Length: 513
Image (cartoon, rainbow, N blue to C red; front, side, top):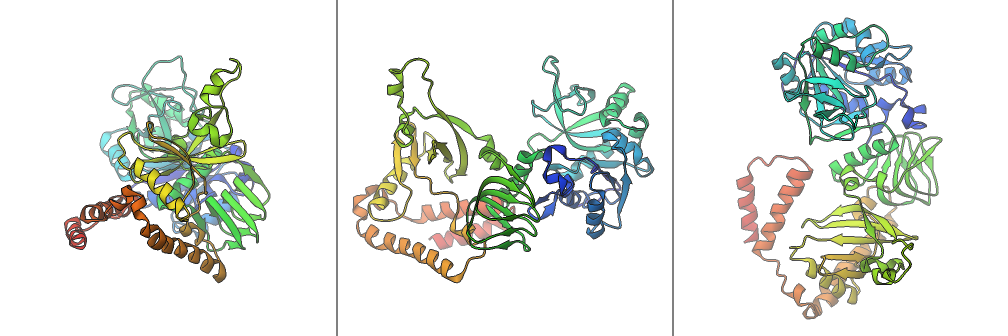
């Protein structure tokens, strides 16, 4: 990767008020995401592209940031710019003028998670003649930077608040918190407290090029409150294909887990605990049962089920009517027909359906909860050829003592079915945490017994399920499976490049034959 002669500036002075009480212990830039502080993840990307000095402004918990920097790989490149009082996003740059006036520099807020090609952003700025190049995203609810058809910044609505003015019709984008500047931008900033947007607008009005660089579609998370922090952690888990993370310094007793579980450094989980959708921050000690929580050394932050999901899952959350016949029997709610005869004021019951899994054939699995009961809704594409097979297999295996989720109801016309909710923990996730030998043996014996049942009593009666008997695992199915493995796992999840795909395909073809 090419390195550019740029300095780096990381604003890190803020109080992180919306993240309290977590930020009473750690400044926001040092909040960990799977063992790595946010600011460290940022510098890992920027230091590979920019070879200059790294400036960091300080105020809240400055001693902790200094300690982190001293132990970091970039300690010889870091220079601090203390602020008292905090000077704002523009005042911070003016305060660091002794560093930033030398050459072009990149500013990256130290609470932003953005997955873009930073080398491309820098190269665009250096080649463009811009005085400022702002990485921007098109998200209507945050878009308050007004631009023209060339991307030139004309105005900023509600500076510092990222709140668009709904009465103003214009082309608008959202600023991500990352920009590349030429030193000239500093001349448009006053001394003292100010916002960086002051310089953008002033420079633009003076005829300088202040342009938006479109990064729409890239992953972007502004970690501002417990929900966005949790989402950043769980997105990182999902990126790894994991549901459990345990720091090497975390200690665990015997515990049960479900959903997403993150144990950061120096955490302790005592015997008999149960964790479901929980993030334990450094120094937390827990016992008992906890669900949908961020837990620190002396505090607990409770979140909703929807807020303890990765961004992809949260984005597909929807509402379902429990009067739908598919749900009515299991949840004990009146069906649509019964409700039609009820008084008009008797409104139907609704529930959030939260995405919990994606099937290989584009199926969607949602968790539905109501009145202490829960179930999993499966939705298939209208053209899904395997919907009927899925239902037939479920009924057949259940009859022959193979432990599959019970099917409560189905809707063949809508390609939907409602299943028993057995939780989110897989055998793989179960074994990510310490287990005694007896527990490991017990769970493997149960798994082996299920396999034995499938290959003996169930197989002996396969004629009872014609759709299964005719499902021959032949050449075509084997090649589908291996292609799926390469595309979805090797390339899609692990982000690995297959050096010679034709050679690998040829080998898999021979194996299938």
